[in-house]
Image (cartoon, rainbow, N blue to C red; front, side, top):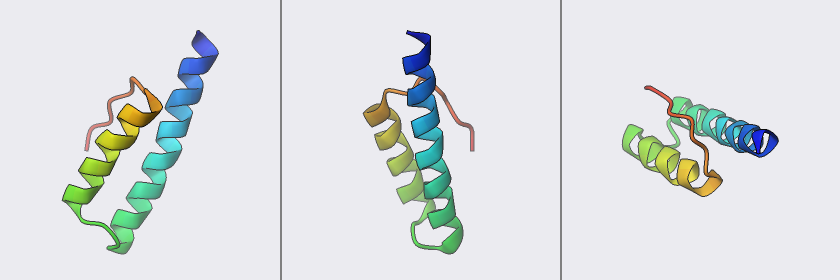
Length: 52
């Protein structure tokens, strides 16, 4: 379903923006950011792959 996949991607991108803010503030390390990014990508079922 097209709408469902777009919702998953939007949810993942929102979570990713929060994680990047936490990383920029120094609240999480680079390793923690990567680990959380993979976790939430699997949790949301998003098929988007973000570089960097």
